[in-house]
Length: 312
Length: 310
Image (cartoon, rainbow over all chains, first blue to last red; front, side):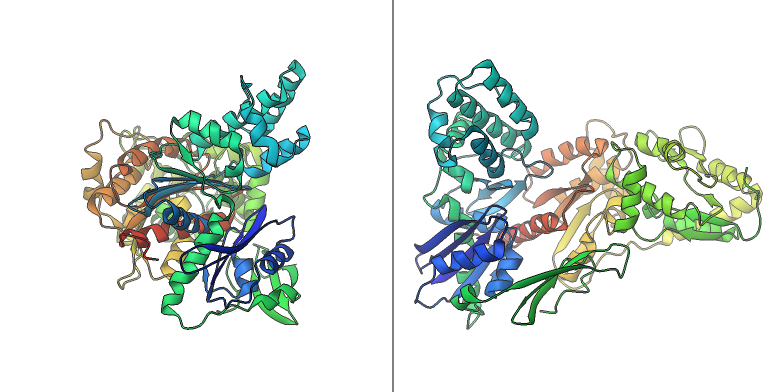
């Protein structure tokens, strides 16, 4: 079994995959601002007695997850997502991934990524915003998509910026639009925003794989299909694709390595402490974070110059 | 008017065109017998001052420039902040360079006198601008000419060597000099890639003929500063295959680059040389840059294989 851990801004996903890249066990947990606890909980849920042959971590919190698990490979989420998508849909040309706080597009050719883009200065249209709006409207996020599908005439919502999108939604509510029309309108505007900002200038060719947490939202998926005029495929494990990619990478890297460096599932019960301080050695005044367990420092990071990094 | 005395300190902000012309400037002022004081390489506290004093809608590297001027202002007798208008025939500098001395005077008080001489090749050759610089420093035109000869030699003979040697990947970087060579602004990109054993190629490593040859196919000349140099370099990377892939670094608020990017993007579509853009500004998280660079390098690596090979 190979273990994959994807630590994102909103969720922590863990998977155990077998030789045939079948998901054996998995967990999807909200980070809730406590990534270390979430990683431990995720591992507890995917804990198994079968031996783990390799561990891969990905996501914006990949370094943290790597320190906790003592991973065999640490990989960025763009590569991890591309690898998983190319496995489930071998002829995939476009991967659209919308997560908690970032969104990306990956263009593939012959099963390898040839171009990609990731949102730069704007996180409009990502999971966090949808969560926030669902909460504001008193709708569980799981029902958000189905409700959007019921709309007959979606309201026009400005999608350029989430702040303006919200004021637009409030205004439309005040005008008396039905909630399903507002939600459907929001889905449409967010898709437009994604296409003109993140996917701008990229050749979007089928087959298109739509993954990440937001892919669970049927409203967004429908809006994407309408806007692109193409079918969009959402894989079964859309939320776990990053983690699956990381596990696949671990499987690959272990071909050249004898034994995994995995710390073992015992880490679920280990205590990890973090401590931060400001390094005053130069005018950059970097914030340094130290992660330790049982009095032993496992990792230190945060300095621009690298002077606090532990030698690997 | 500034009065000359032998140990006059001339402050040069380590920002903007310093990154292109430092060999020339340094030699020029030292040849004339001045003490040259540089601000330190950009750092967080310096940038903080820049953000505090700069106008909010100018670009990131300009805000950095303000921080350097602020650092220098009480340490020198005079600041070398020329008004760069046009440095090449039929080309214009971006308006922020033209207005820099004015913006500085308007927002930072107690500045020492600025050597805000116009550099405008459309109106007069550089030598006359340098003579004016000399005049303000009470140096004769003759001395200026002599110093300038030496200064131009140091500029020409400066080696922009970013190669590591060895057979590591060759990565091209296209960017304005004050983005790519300012380590803080560029998140130490060159150093990070070199640490991985890669060889870096920038516009400064190419001979002008190569760049001009690429530019010749464009429908009309580009009149933005660094426009032809950067687009020509990017086209060379795309067409020649001299690099394994290249990165284009732009500042989020850069007007000229937002247009030039379209030309490069357009040409990149029909090329199979891996290419990606990194957008930088004062809110840029290094982690985000590293994620993209890492994915970019993966792309190059996988390109040499047909499948992911898992």
